[in-house]
Length: 348
Image (cartoon, rainbow, N blue to C red; front, side):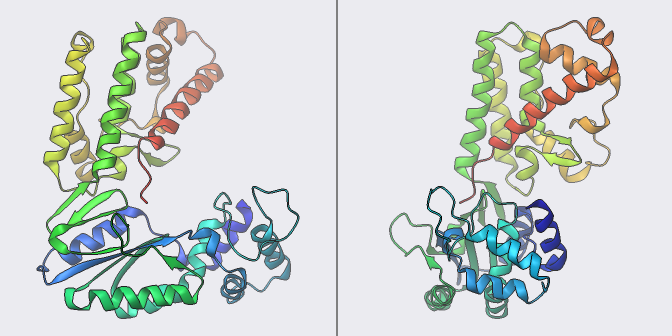
């Protein structure tokens, strides 16, 4: 599946889904100068992956892929039923767990996306669609998009109370890809903000059940700053670095400081800051030493982290063979990184 994914990405390089912050940046730039005679048209597609029609999908794939063996592999992958003992092949749906699912969904939406971009200020991230248009044209735009979705087998959530599909004025703002977006302000969505507060409290609650206070501080700092590991930027602040709501980050810093003090941890050092991390990411990422770059850690740095996280003496860890140090370091970092991914709530 990974090999097929690599081939499809090479064949459909222009169809790869951009990162969420790319869309937030474009939307923010677009709506900044607009007044409130414009609205957001937000459309959420129901059961997106399970509704993809195989015949239409393979037609799109064949536009650039000619190798019969590869086409057969793709067809077999998407037709194999999942979560059932039935041997019957499915004619609809792409299993979300496959490594090829994202690129196949992007290929499937190619013509639809092209049509919408030719008509509207249009943005789509998987099943979440945003259009910015004149308020007087919003209802018509919603109806047109819904109709075009139906033509490719997709249904959008209706505009009902509490629905993700809605039309709202620009100054009301919308939640999109973990952010709250309106003219002149981009904030972290409330649910994502609360999730980070809960994560912080989870770390500090653990402090009551351990005497390893160095580990608690290390873990809390990684939650705040994130890290760079396996050449990738990881963590909550990296994901939400498009925010312009610095007051929101300052409130988080005050929350951390207060919770740290109430936990009786002041004597063990001070946690890092969300605001400082934000500015390092935005303006000094290439040179920052504030955010850990685990890929570049020296032996001494690895030993220090292992000692803190395992509650051992640094002098003892320094006597370990290099391969043992490397294994222990990688195990600790991978565990922390996996938890960083859980700190971000799903977008949709």
